Length: 383
Image (cartoon, rainbow, N blue to C red):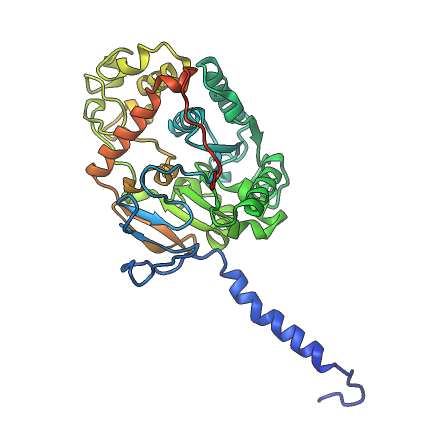
């Protein structure tokens, strides 16, 4: 029965204000969503953040992302946070260090997130060492270290539950760098390269939800291995603009190392049969630099590259490559992954492989990376 004894007076203005808040909230919650694919760029001549499509006139062929993709010959100036769990099982960190040393990438943050999932053992403090050693190899190889930030540690916890909402230096770094850049250049979002579990970024969101609309997350591979920490991956998929790559449309594995199309190709099939100067590996080892020598060592010894019938051939956490190489992907679609819509790569071809090899090998072999004069500096937009 309705209680008519006491009805508090509510001013009409209060009703209007509360109603307005509820009306605003849905659009705010959609601020970091992708818009539908642009198929006709003449009908979308003035794209906004969240717009995407392929082959926009005046830009390199391939996947165009507004706020990231630039005309041929212009520098990508979006700052980058590189976040990974292990730094010595992939080669995109070496590539990123080289790009930063050249002045072609604004590498703003390096985060190591040493966690996995309860099923495989959540806490891996030993992974921190791999990040520190990767940066040490860059220093020993003559890279310009004022362009390669120090390592910041992200989420550390004993299990998945303890990792939820976990404050860390890495989480605070996300909040600071994303907000600082957004204040200066809101039209060109900071780029996050996620190569491990996204625990640190998810906790950063808990500290400041506004960061979601101020960055774009390149996530390898949200659907499978690096998305297994469900609390984190579902939160990131739900709130951030995510470009996801992995699973059935990922790098093309090869039966033999001598069949590689992306990584430098040795002469023989098996890693144990190739010495460090085999085939194209010599291009790296003849420079006698720790950063490049370590890559060849990993080719020879890490199981995912040198054992079995499916040998890895690529920069395995390197979805971020797209920002500098729009032609890396042949197709993409808005896809529901981890319960939310993300922009998922749906086609990667031998032609895409060729483009990646040409681009990455040229970068890694550039003598200017390793302390030679004549680097091209990044200048801010408008200079």
